[in-house]
Image (cartoon, rainbow, N blue to C red; front, side, top):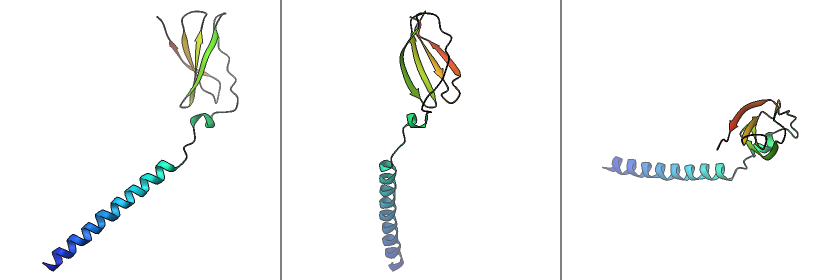
Length: 97
């Protein structure tokens, strides 16, 4: 009976220690600064877009490792995906109505 009591106390201590360790680990991860994706992009990006006359840029957003450029005018609205490292166009998305 004495061994059972010791085992219960030891297991209780292990549960408490494990819970404290888990809480400390989560607190450390949540307080660590997270570098924004934009900081990883180059300072300047040179890209040539073959778009019709009258096209203008309505907005630019960093999406993971790409730049999404919203274009309006010169046809249907569209989004062009650009690789900032090379300046190459990697995709087109048409926003037809």
